[in-house]
Image (cartoon, rainbow, N blue to C red; front, side, top):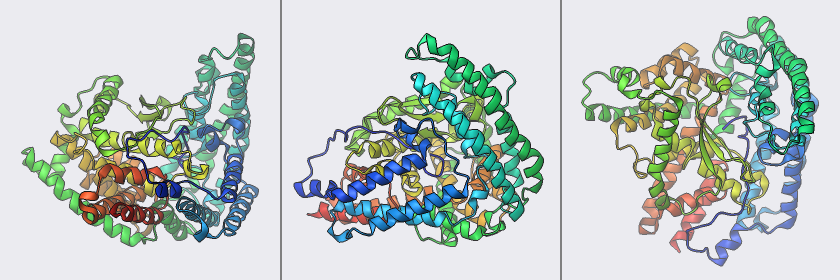
Length: 598
């Protein structure tokens, strides 16, 4: 999920349920009834679409598909600050205790959101406008290729994209100006990240516009674009690629190579830049939605690494492997029997087979399932080298399915022991596809909730669903279970490595070595992961912190409710109101548990 707010998703009616009907009291609690509050939320969301038109496009709001605002300017940040503060003040004009249960949740989430965003605007992170993992130069490629969420269905859509291209040239000039301010003040990226960004920019530079990624829509005109428009649009796209996009990417590449790289830092953690400790503390709170200290998270990580390691030893013994755990990791990485695939399609079919296997058991664990269609696709070549497997949510009108993207650089090296089953549960079903789609399909939620994202909730849920593998009929192969343990270990290791690098002086090289010592990961994979944590501090903490909270709540209610506990009801309740900070979801689930006892 992506960008600092995962870009959003699907509308539709509240999904069909196999659950018994809710009582009148429950239904009343679940429906917003304060019209003034609802109007305020609608006004906020409408303005949000103008501030963040790319997010609006992802959510199926096509009014601003031609716009790409320059969010690099002080005036933009000042406008945001005023916008958030005004809406926080408006919220505080309502008496929370007078609202129904659903509106109280909305009140709490909105207050949290505004306060968090206002706090974030005080940081100097604007001096680092993008990095190798996330950023507009990469997003432009996804959008402009015609395979992302920018629509290319009619003439107007094709013209809209040209508007965004003009916006990008301006954005890039401001990004360079902000990078330069960072160079002057020491707020710069590590060198090891900058050397990864340069080839990303260079890959967009072509001499023949028809060879550009951005020429894709011209090669795939839909029937709705009349022949009379095609020649004009073809010429306009050639011009845009040759005179705007290619020069802009060339300018970014040259600047990063010649000016920025020499000034980039040799240190690893963000605490090494001015204000770095405050930035990290903010990101820890932002991504975990808790007040846990970095040090507490570090200790939790160490405990989880130890626990999961003990489980891995059991699997090693079960399959009769006689060597050390590091030797077992090497065996899992290098034995050819774990790389049976010859083509990308074979890899994709293996994931489709996983989907077919869990299908019969999903109804036992979920009363509500999404209407949004779902597909498995190979990640596009232009971004596959630096991409992880990921889920891209569908469009509100159902015209674009939720997509599970799998990067396959070389199918013959794609290992079955990489945790394919757990990866599918996490990124696809019932992980991100269920959680995100159900949230977006719930029209009882105000839009700021339908299209919101909190990493600890969303990634926590996705990691929690990996633990459902045995209940869903997976992990019968010990090597697949080892892969699942490897995936969980990955998230535990992140707590140690992320906090270690950004607060405890752990170097990039030490972090890579720690990963290699505790996981069956290649050195190339460990480098990509560690550099991801360097680029987006704190984000990697959200998975394990969220998962531990969900598991804690499930175990607690199973114990408290006994025979009254129904796993499907627990899952449905957890998901039905969308993402929210962990403290708010815990309060909500407490109310649900009390209701079950009645």
